[in-house]
Image 1 (cartoon, rainbow, N blue to C red):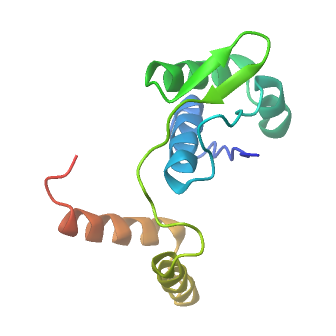
Image 2 (tube, rainbow, N blue to C red):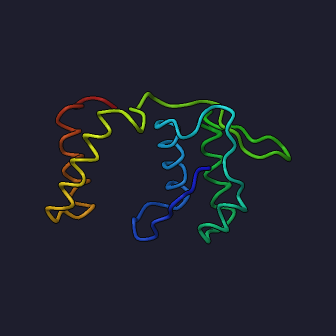
Image 3 (cartoon, rainbow, N blue to C red):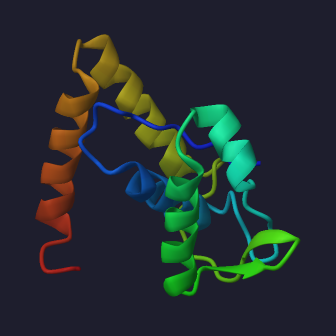
Length: 128
């Protein structure tokens, strides 16, 4: 089951963090069509956020056509996103090795994110 991690210091609205993490799970194949998202109660118990925040995130995902609410049953995945490399792919393994080296050299998470974004922008310039 998907477990949301809320970073209260990120500056990103909590409901957007849930939306982003759900999109990432869809892109990485962690969630597939037919899978049920955690209930609002489960998310609230795990993260100590307001249930309306969870519902707002789920409504946004529903508006995007990614999930659907089924009365009395929960919220289910309707569509998937992208074709990211699976967890056991060589590409992911290389990226994990790079991340380990970056951490061993003392880079902070934000440093790595900035560096990675810079490289992404270089190789995916013009892509939305």
